[in-house]
Structure formats: C-alpha cells, structure tokens
Length: 51
Image (cartoon, rainbow, N blue to C red; front, side):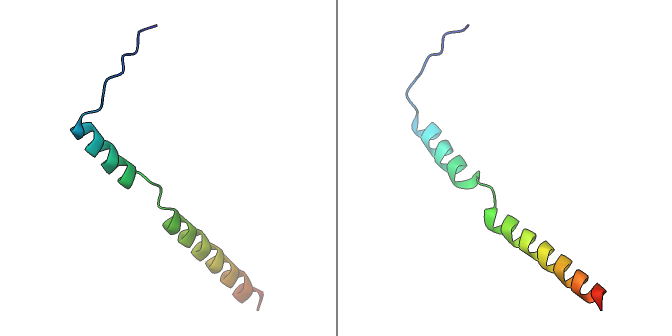
C-alpha cells in the first residue's frame, strides 16, 4: 500500500470545501413536496374513480 501524506489545507482548499459543503446537499424539502403531491393525486384519483 502507498503511504498517505497529509498536508495542511490552503486557503483555496478551505474556500472550496466551504462551497461544496454549502451546495452539495439533497433537496429534501422538494423531495417531500413531490412525494406528498403524488400521494394526494393518487388519493384524489381513487376517490373520484369510486364514484
């Protein structure tokens, strides 16, 4: 195995890491809204189809 050498982060690396931490997140509110909308549409279609 290769040796792993650790070096101190530069200011550019810190800024890049902060940017990635801020932008690389899953859009959980959007996912929840889409799931709720799909569930609502399915429920309405079942209810309307029953009559």
